[in-house]
Length: 333
Image (cartoon, rainbow, N blue to C red):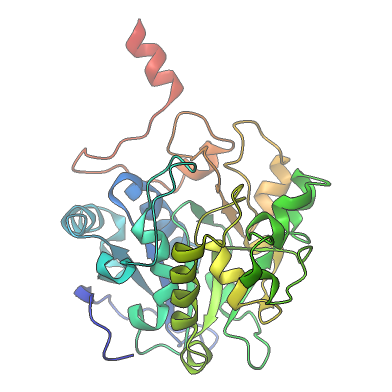
């Protein structure tokens, strides 16, 4: 792994040593991608994680060139100035020949969404790490997620779509959306040859725990890159892709080879509609809230954006601002 170039830690801010409580001496590596247009999301996620644990957390914040200075200004001018973090630059050259723009999807490729494929490079010295998307809020102690038991030989633990508390609460009988056939084109011979059951339950890659020793041993990153290249050449992903382009290669590589996290550690679909699909009690009980979908909590309309906003820290540079309906109404007057 040491031969891989393009991931350069560009700074490191040490924190005053936190008190070790109940033997919580182990440092918890948390990886989160922070893109310029969604930077407020990453800030809120980091703030919620830091506030709700007494453990020592090291944040590995993955960015593209140009975002690091903005991020550093935001962190250093707020209550987050004491967190321990490294900013890691993501080299988009790694994705050459592995992703292609799909005009049917209507959205351009977002390089940072693939950062999760390169965890051993981003966190080279860790044996275990947590990955979270930038559209989450953590309400539980991240130590509990970190302590998720992984079965021998498993490199990661995800929350499955079929049995998650959030899926049951939101959509019943959703069909293809939560099965492998919703992500992969089973008409393609290369997919059929894998003998993966099309009805297999998919999982959400926005929150997971990784055993990096096992990840390296199994060359997970190389396996993922292989399927990315094959998709570019042969179009293996479903045309009606139920989720992001990062999901299909993960589903192939981790087919029947992953552990599971507690469903309350990825209560998702908060961003799939503007309406409130969950009761306030359910949202309060969730360990982690995930606004996956189009309706982000920093945007115009999203369910429970008030819960998210409790953790948001305004941007001291003024570059990032929340879009709120009432602001638009007042501007019209």
